[in-house]
Image 1 (cartoon, one colour):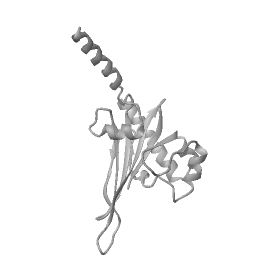
Image 2: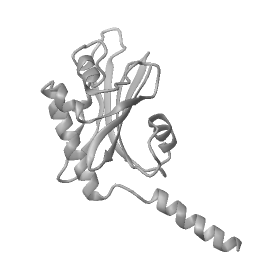
Image 3: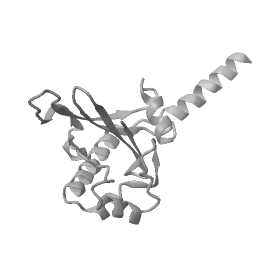
Image 4: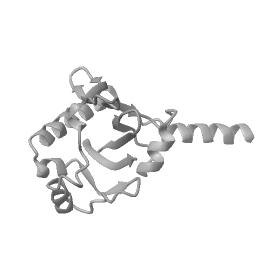
Length: 183
């Protein structure tokens, strides 16, 4: 009886955690992310709004929970509260599925030291990944969904801060489900 229960539990857990991005899904995510970057470069808030799942789950104290697209558009036009800085610097190739991360790109040089650097990374995550608990807990995403996480980090000798953009593919559409900014 114990063996049967264990086998049923194993089959059930495989069913919950087995939905991974296929190679086709990954290419679709990168294609739509590239389109999001294009909308960002053109400062097209309406197009960008289509990539946000409302209400956006906020992972920290910064008030960025948009309940609808009109709130997003209003904040998109306000440079003080805008959250998408440097997201367009991640290089993606939807045809090959290639992601070229930006590593230690110099943003500003200071003669006294304290040069500012930028890292931008993109990665696909499954619930089984080592750091998955952080992203799933922050975003409130179902563990049956895979995530595409873009991390933008600005740092110098004294200060380090990162923004995390957590996306998933819902009904074959890329959606930003959570934004987190640590200091």
